[in-house]
Image (cartoon, rainbow, N blue to C red; front, side, top):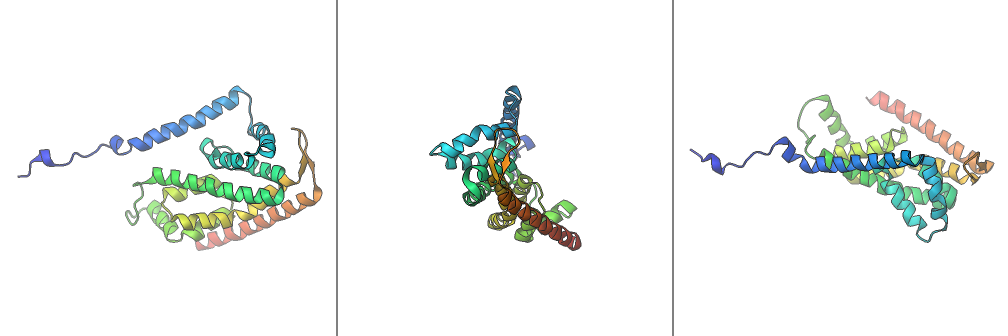
Length: 236
């Protein structure tokens, strides 16, 4: 009879997921800490971006800080739209698009890694026969097409990145689909930011030509979104 003392002790659920619980507690503390600071100082997301505009424009480190802020803003659930508009306002349409594409892909990669960390071991590949595991397997087998469709139909940006990591979708398929699928929206929002000629917290003064271009791109992206939604509905 095998000695039970030599058998490895099974870890409890808490022991198996201790590192995830600690990381989750830290993440929640970060989110709540920012929310508390913002409320205590009556700081809205728009005011926070306004406070950074001058630094982005005039500091030698402005571009690097912009990318850093964009990359980590998902950890405090700060809206990406406002920071994308800021890129157009500060750097113009061309460099603004470049900045947002670089920063948003770094941000998406961070969200992917966070989702992958928390999802490790929760939905193993090829195990289980419920609708969740079947859909997860479908996303894994068609990673590029699935993520591209999600980007084109404007599903919540960060949520898609977290989900891709959680389901352990192939990273290069995910990031390539993200880079391509985000281009129309990026051009539209950065273009709108670039159309703002001056802004002091009130009604901004807009460049009508740049604004018209950004609106046209945005309408085009909505049409593209509708096409992909219909396609997704048929295939489902």
